[in-house]
Image (cartoon, rainbow, N blue to C red; front, side, top):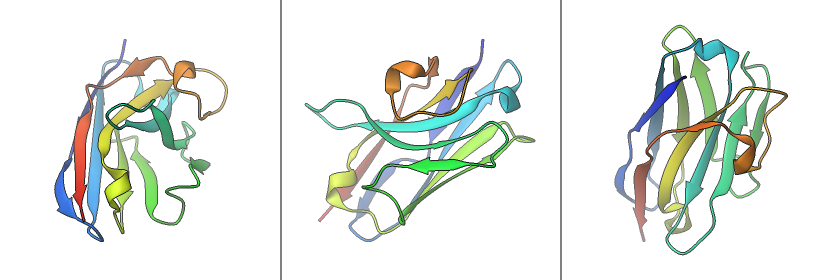
Length: 124
């Protein structure tokens, strides 16, 4: 069983950047597709970005396309989410998650293991 720990969240002003990290321990990290999701208060968990286990393909929600970049370093067992040009509507708890079969999807219930989340707050 893999364990995931997110970090890098914080309070920033609109237009700023943050880089989230998700460190994995346990089983072979390179065997997992990885996803980032977020959940704002009173809202459902929503897809942000995902990457195949090899890193060859990436997927983004329309709301973050062109601003956010997902990447992974399999040697460090870490996946990243670089967030640029942040907007107040990006405020949420951000979670990373693993998907052990098939290809990445935008459906949170397709993912198996989740981290505890990291808070991102963007002020206007």
